[in-house]
Image (cartoon, rainbow, N blue to C red; front, side, top):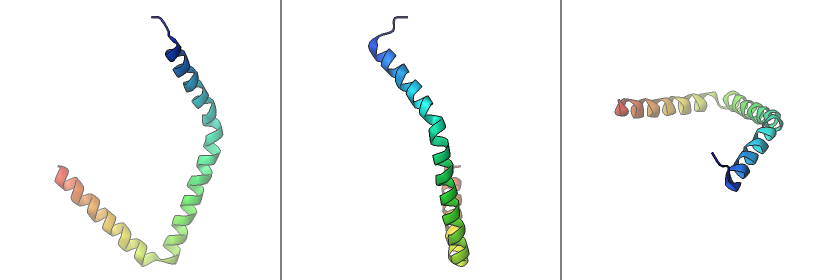
Length: 69
């Protein structure tokens, strides 16, 4: 197989993305932690509204799944 310039550039791009993955992991964990904290505070501040919202989403997902089956 003969490698052309596009193949070489594509491979170098893959290597660069792989090199950036370890740097992105702590940032991702921080984002997940912040999202979890926001969710917990929402549930603590408005438990009934959160329960109703989750029940509505579950109902809608159930309707979609039963129509697909």
